[in-house]
Length: 152
Image (cartoon, rainbow, N blue to C red; front, side, top):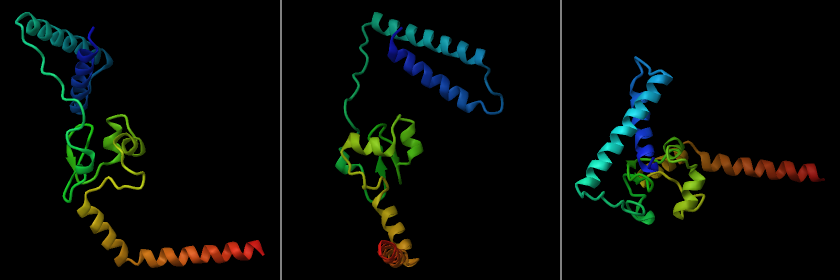
C-alpha cells in the first residue's frame, strides 16, 4: 500500500478519533475506519490515474523564507504554513520536532525567540516594569560574592 495513502488515512482517522469525545471510538472501530478510509483513498487514486488525472505536485520547501517567518504581528510555522503569535513546543511536537530541532533545521540561533516581535516587546516591557533586569544584576553580584567568600 502506498505510504502517502496510509499517511493521509491515519491523519483522517486521528481527526475522527479526536472529534469523538462524547462517544469515543473503540480499537475495533478505529481499525475498521482506517481500513475503510485506506480503501476509499486507494479507489480514488486508481480512478484518478485511470482517467489520466495527475496528482498535484507537492511544493517543496517552506511556505515562506525562514528570515521572513517571524513578523511583527505573527510567526509562520515553516513546517505547515500556519500563523501564530508564538510557535509553541506543543505545536512543534505535532511535526515531531522540539524547539531546538526546529531552530537548527531552519537556521535560527538557539537563543532566537519563536514569538512575534510585538509579543517579544510586550514581554520585555513587562519584565522591565517589574524590575527583572535590576534583580538579575543583584542576584549575579550576590552569587559572585558568595563564590568569592567560599573560595577564600
